[in-house]
Image (cartoon, rainbow, N blue to C red; front, side, top):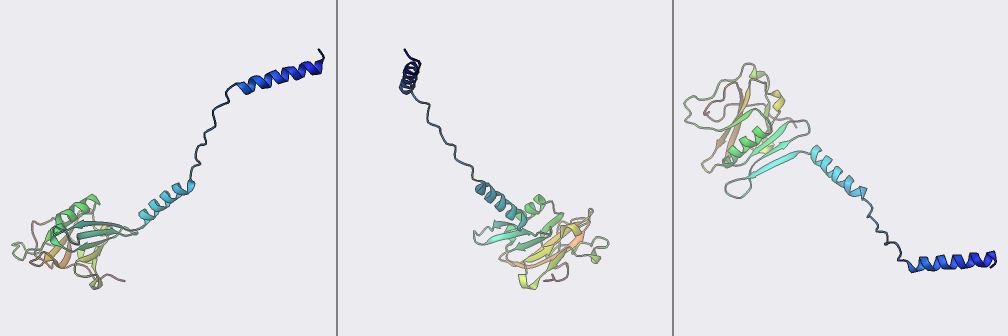
Length: 190
């Protein structure tokens, strides 16, 4: 046998055996990751963190939210109280946020009247009011409340539990009750 013929036969036999063997399993293609989806999630999360956080609670009547706490970019809070039914939930939310504040419903028959102000409290007002926002909306900066103080927020209500007034005072001891309209801060600046 000549060498080229021998080579051809070996090659033909090898090719025939390879053709008879089952081929490798088809390669499965792993779907490409979509970096755009990850970017979208990150972008939405970042936008949510940068934007204000609003925490509403539905009032007992099932209508509009009883209150909302909106955290601003600078750390201050906007507080909207629409119905006295949500005051205990509002207190829970302020506690959860770590704000040293107590919410009381004003009581015209409170024997102790208005609680005394904390020393030096008249020099700073953590809570400001805006006539444009309505009687149940205030803005306040938790950083202006000193370690030994609590911001007392007194809610004056009508007979139907809607909000008549909001007032505030920095106190060193939280009273069991307070009359409404105990004072507060200056108008909020636009």
